[in-house]
Image (cartoon, rainbow, N blue to C red; front, side, top):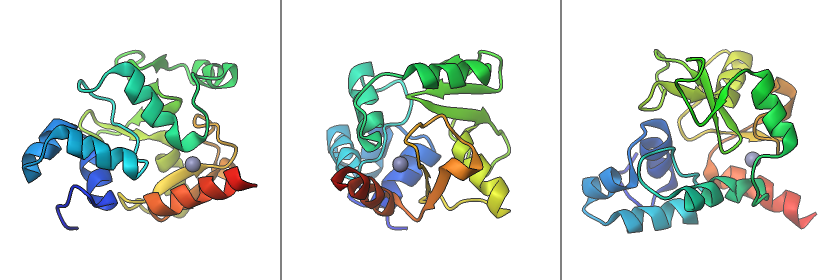
Length: 174
Ligand SMILES: [Zn+2]
């Protein structure tokens, strides 16, 4: 994978999988964090949960792909409650947290855990079904667009960000 701030695979590997901030990533390639942010948005890559970035822009970018510029639906809140996890708080109950409607599970020894040792539950579910780890550029799409509904039948494996975006475009143009 080429270290290129314009490359979707590199951006999602560093930002989502390895958990680097846009500032760190900018420093790696000698560009500003605004440049990195610009390309993340352009590729529709959700912003990592991190110290950088303000809450509102982070929330908006996270929702870009879900065709739903909104807060959690009551259904999502209920799913989080059922899963007994705390919103945006990895320390709550220790094992899981919910951010932007997505559920993350503690998986310390997972090869692609983020910098805090968590993996998207949707990815873990797909990996269990497939019997192998997903590639970092793969994306788990939620068929019913409920990002916390990680039932195997609701998940669809996308090759990469571009594939995922094309699925959402198709849905929207219906
Ligand atoms: Zn999707």
